[in-house]
Length: 252
Length: 252
DNA sequence: GACAACGTGCGACATTGTCGCACGCCCGGC
DNA sequence: GCCGGGCGTGCGACAATGTCGCACGTTGTC
Image 1 (tube, chains in turn green, brown, yellow, purple):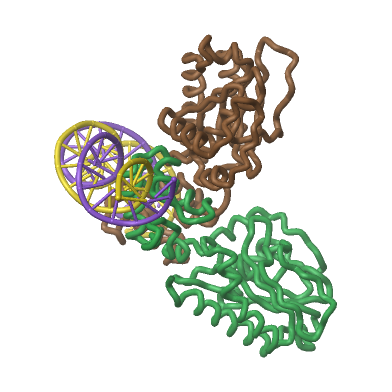
Image 2: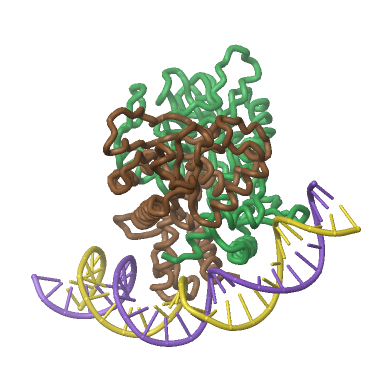
């Protein structure tokens, strides 16, 4: 095992765990390293963009480079704050409820929720974890996640309705289709009478960090043949692209 | 600049750029490195959880560790299961009660407890949260935790006995001493007549994930001058080192 | 205003990572 | 089915690399 890499990862974990920026000495003490060694590691990590040093306080914090890498290194809070306005706009234009979700070990975690503009009696879904294989956001996230193969392989696909995709084969075909067209939908696969359309939000390198989509009654989301309405699909995809551009563009 | 860290970041960038998993040779060729070197870097990155290798295709991809940078370093259950045998051995050799603890927002959470071999009337402490600034395990954990500064700064150091360290200044000096010598003790700082000796358990890179120590009557833990017995200190430190080796070696 | 503590840089040492080679294994082909 | 190429992996020797101790200049604090 390469020592300096192990130490680097420890430094990064330390910076991630700490609430604020950390001093060189704090890191050195926590890891039991001499100041010089810790400083050398930090300088290198800064050079590659994994950490950044605040010029004023001389303290170190996680850098943009790491966020671009991991994608999920993308902080949920940052993702939500960046996508917030776009989600509002999508809800206004589509007149549907909009949700944003990220992949979670146990499914899709809803990190933002905009109520449908013309409806007042809706449940707040933020914080909820919904099944990945039976929702539009979930399937979109699975389609672009490198770990999806595992989830698919392990079976255990619960059936929530008669339309739920339960076989790994069907799910794999769904995911392939999503990858091909760039968006996904789920019609009555989780809750009867409800459907969703979702598209992936990407950061630098095309890495998918989350999904955004609309969700509501089948008759509003789909046409008479139960196919997702083209206009809605386009709006969702356009919003996802806009957020992706927003996430990729500015470097702090 | 540290070469191996730069190379690691290049590997991670490479893995992030390509949506598909990459072979060792592909990475090696792209970076102009010998296969062995690339393999060593990948193995280390896998060890720290930044990349994962698909057992079937032997290809590498980005790992969960990058995503979980904000999360906890090690599962409490795993830590306990790994340290269990070592704790038993320490209890047998030292003939003292052994406890294992991790840092908690409100103190030290005792996650394992081995009774003193020759004593039957003892209370089970597992699950208990004990004060951090007045116990050996707590002070050890504070010494290596970057959040300790906050805890120390905010005052609120309750006095449990006459010997409890209550001023941030004294506590800071204690923590510095612990960092210097690699172990810590607390003599009648929490419960009168009782003392403890503790040492940190580390994972790769030196990250401290918990503390292990002995705890018992002052006359057993300390010598006639109320200094912790050297033999006990050495046993505790040796056990902590052994657990650290165990934690670092096999997959974390 | 003085002290302490921090971040930073430099140099020597030896520990550490690198590199070349070779072993098994799986896959593909004549 | 047998053989060949290519790949992932492990080992060992070398020396290049990272580490550590010390000291400087500066900042922040009492």
